[in-house]
Image (cartoon, rainbow, N blue to C red; front, side, top):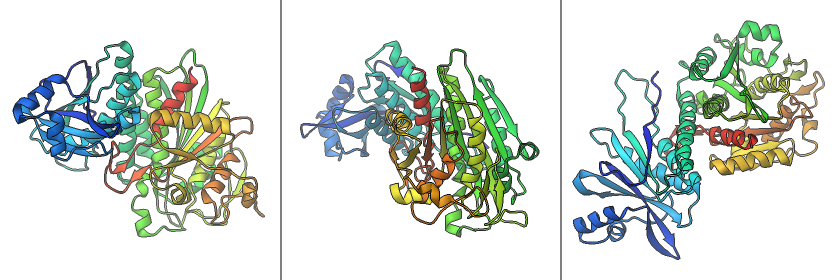
Length: 500
């Protein structure tokens, strides 16, 4: 399968005259619309072409400062201008990221005869704003390459971020943006790939190939190795499928590492619900149930490529949850990696079982912090909707660390509690614990179950990305329909914070 290729990305101090599309901003200052990032020569050319200033032309065609708005204007020599709404004039990196994404998506929708050269003119000066503009543009350019015999059509050839800053910090921001955006798009590609193409074995192969040439050591445990090691969760969940489970381990251990971060991702390549079969509508998007594994693997690659001085050990627990004569059953008792026994309540609550195996294994590495990422519960989507991910943690310090990273990355997480007494719902009469409780507070109970497999002395945070991992609606800002690559940017930002 052909993967998405990022457009070429450059930084320039002036708007390229050969740009096919120029994206500029409209913001609101004291209730008045103002242009943002428009080069003087562009304003002058527009005034000469239309007999009035660019702001008047744009306003006349409906451009405004409303975030998410885009207006296409004719430019000189067959080029196009795209006005994007920024909101308030005092913009944040995330506002610029979204505006750049909207502008590039609008450019990609022009259906040009050849791939377009796009200039992003949003008055990006500070490194974080430059990075936001570049990330938004590259992520907005993303499209999944269809499974087809036809050659894919490339919409965007190149992106130039225009900044008056020629400082090294701005150029480093561009390089970081390129690396992080590539990781997000890799995660999106994996999530969007059909489950008959991406299953545990091929996912593990793709993960290994993705980090070839980096300083990441890769280990893959197949069914036989999992059986020898006693990984009862992975073996039970994968037991109903003809495609056996895998546990992929990435280890990036640079010299001078200042901390050790462990990442664990849920990699259910397709989830039928097992014997507790899902509805047909509920099953259709379940190729995306491996988005947590995609996020941690892609983020680890970016961390290594950026050369961050943090050791990162990542685990992707991969299985296909299918109903068959060899499928595990409700009421079965499973022996997890490490020896804890679990009474299975529902075979559609499979993610926590494979995660439990991986969490115990991650704890054996003695990291300073464990983060797990999973499309774990519909209950979290009910609580927070489809654009906000849930965060539950062992303590507020760990939660705050992740929330700070998410804010800097521009991703939306909301902390939920693990109330006292939640663990009591998991008491079992036939095993050490049950895999679930009653229907109330399902996201919190699931987090409590996972915490049972984390060492008591290691800070831990659980990211439930069930809502934002897969966008079933239309694209918006820099977010496409389908796989979103959520959590990749937060994990990279977290690693960056740990090295300081």
